[in-house]
Length: 365
Image 1 (cartoon, rainbow, N blue to C red):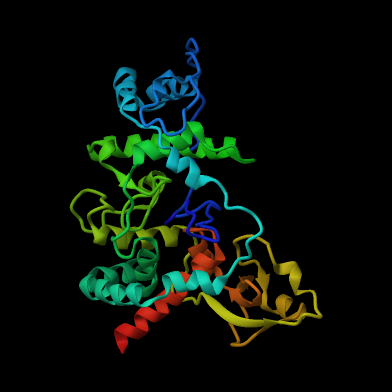
Image 2 (cartoon, one colour):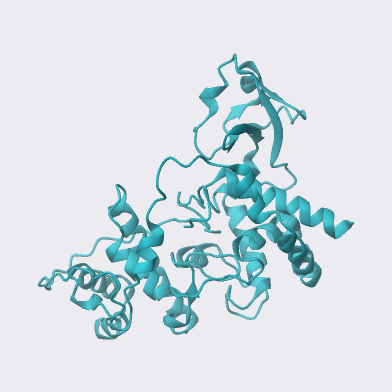
């Protein structure tokens, strides 16, 4: 699930963000009616690791809401937030990339479908073959797809992030960079801060023990805290969900996430296709992360599959821009778009699919 990430030409992006990945869904809490005297607003100072969030009026309102909605003790929560650091690097990394640079699928793919990830994917599969087989049987998600997602996200646990999640998410919740969607993004991260605190309370762990990406994604599969609480599973059966230390929990949780975002057992993901430049196929571009067109409808507009797909499925047109070179085109089936809910990017989903094929081929060699 990963989840908000600059790794995508994204996520979900992810999308990212494009929003993702691993499933970026806000919990819509009920409105509070508590009113408190506003505290003096102190603007964040860039680079100040010891900015006092408790002096910010929006933080005070958040604490009131957490007390009323979730039963947190205000003084204890103030003490927790008093230990939280403002992370300027999270702000800088969240800023959008400069416009104008063309997307390049070949360059993006080469970062993820490469010998290190392929070899590590084979080793991971061999080590956790039983758990992967059990996840495939229970959820209907092929083992190679689960393996590939964990490989793309963290190279099988090697790169899970070293930001304190509380620091990163609190910073983004109250000091998100000035972008057109700033209010929505801050609201999203405030929901993730709520979920971080609830998850830590439920699991009886120190919230500051959670390390992750600059956006707060956690563990082997890079789930945001809200996705952990909603989609993650205790797949190793020890009574706890631990995506940081349990690859088996990560395996089950990736499968659970995909199924809850539309994965269909036994169905394909993509079909290579060609487009007739004289026809009206462009109307299928930019139509969202959803398979919603019939095969007949797409063929009539100049989309010709290289391999004939099933007639009774719906599809979306996937365009993979390749810099100065010609774009690649694919028919995306519902399972392709289920992967994009992990990270809202065509590049991301195709890299998962290509890595999954490469790992399976290498393992079976």
